[in-house]
Amino acid sequence: MRLRELYWWPGMDSQVEAFIKHCSACQSIDKTLSFFSPPLQLVPHPSAAWEKLGNDTVGPLQGAPYGQRFAITLTDNYSKWPEVFFCSHVTTKEVTNFLNEVFSREGYSSEIVTDNGKQFTSHEFKCFLEERYIHHCKASLHHPQANGEIERFNKAFKDCLQMGHVTQRHTTDSLGDFLMSYRSTPHCVTGATPSLLLHGRTLRTKLHALVASRPVNDGAIIHEQLRER
Image (cartoon, rainbow, N blue to C red; front, side, top):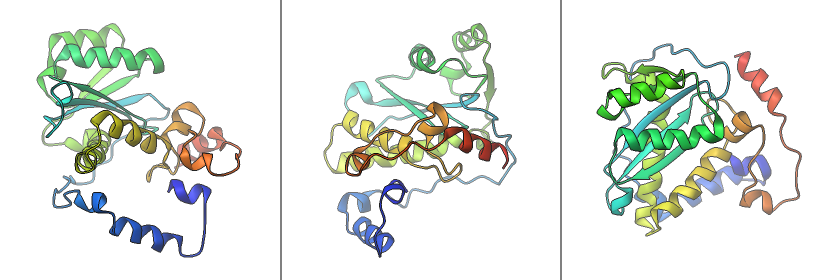
């Protein structure tokens, strides 16, 4: 998707597919892992960026250093912008410290969706959200689609870590490249990049450095198109 935004040549799609097919790291990802696809259910889409967030945890992560055995993940359901934080143990304190750091940059959301993990059901977490007037929605085990956005991101995140492990890259290096790619790639649902929908600008990547500068897409137009869907 990002390549198509900046380049085109005859047979580009087939050449890219062939490259991926013969990429040993790409093919090493375990494609037998099935991603749970619950029955379709209408979940209201937020009307603005950073209005509704999904929060989850991933781990323990195989082969990761002790301080990176777990990851706390966060996604904005409107823009699909992700945040990730590594930690040795997942506690309410680790989660709230992570959220505080993100909120210091992006501001508070109106709602946050989590599962029923003990770090999210503690009194400390309840007070943390109440003090910031953030509504807490807990997705039940029987209806995980209520937090489907974060689950889809987690799958892509785990694929990234698996590829990094195969290529013997440091976990933080793999994460940095993955987040840059995810934030600057048009999402299949919105058709726009997370960076454009959340921050109103296109991230400059290595692909942009190889071509002459181009005008940034009009974020206001993209937002209006999403509202009309």
